[in-house]
Image (cartoon, rainbow, N blue to C red; front, side, top):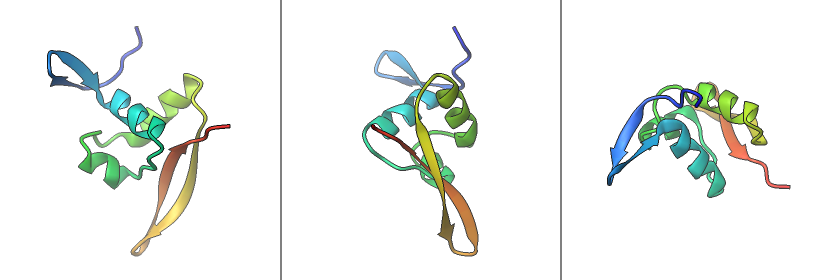
Length: 79
């Protein structure tokens, strides 16, 4: 199988950070890097998004203003 990234042990099975990202997006959540970090999804949100897109997930992004910075906010598009 493809490398899925760092693992976190949860109740007898492993949940990868990438799986956490996908589950959050599937629940309709929108994520920025800081939000993903705060939810235990690691520092590589854009890498997870890239891999999930390559796997066929229609993930969209927009730039949002956060203080002085503009950051990407990602969500799963549902047709």
